[in-house]
Length: 304
Image (cartoon, rainbow, N blue to C red):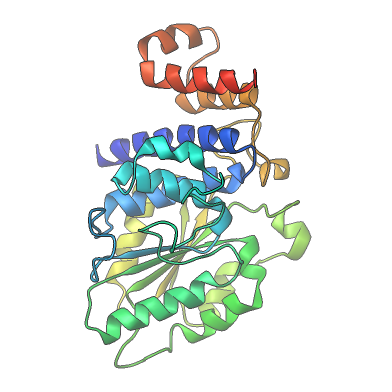
């Protein structure tokens, strides 16, 4: 039942991601849709946090190192109560706290300004070490993109983390998750700079590595349990995902790395995400007023 609840939250977030990006007219749908299940599993399955006190010292931290996928994080934060879901359509608008990459000054609850790729793991090491030195029970969850880990700074941090502070302050409060959707900016990762054998590389630096289906809530939860139970070292989770997951014309298509859908494409995407056939769509909208309102506002964008 817990997995069904998380799947439902993730499905609703996918709808919001499409809605946000269509209103913005720009952004990154592919990586937002691939990472949303991971974020939902963390935020609603185990994260210790309080949206009313986003600066609570003993909170757990999420660092979305692949900052261009921040629409997914914004959806999760809104659903958790950090701000109203009505604000989601201000994504990338002038003056909005929901910038195109995470901005911890603009929005309470964001832990690190990311999107200059490769830096999030180093930031996460500092957060994890700081928590250890302070005697805090806080855990840190760092989410990396697969294309991102071509960056040299990632490997410097990867070499350091299993040894940093050891033996007095081992960073076993750090879980790093690679959103391995296998597509980066304009092509497949294997064609740009192949990461394989990615598991063996991290293991060679002393990391325990767990491989999972990054869209399976039960597998995500089990992997995070294993990470929490592992003492003396941080843990890496390689989450195999699908770029554009949930929308057939976006899935495994590099074209949708950084292109917002047009209103008609957005409506078609939402119908697919919700699993409604074209023949049943009008009847579905009559029974689901919330979705009908979203579809109506998206169709209105076509007339502007």
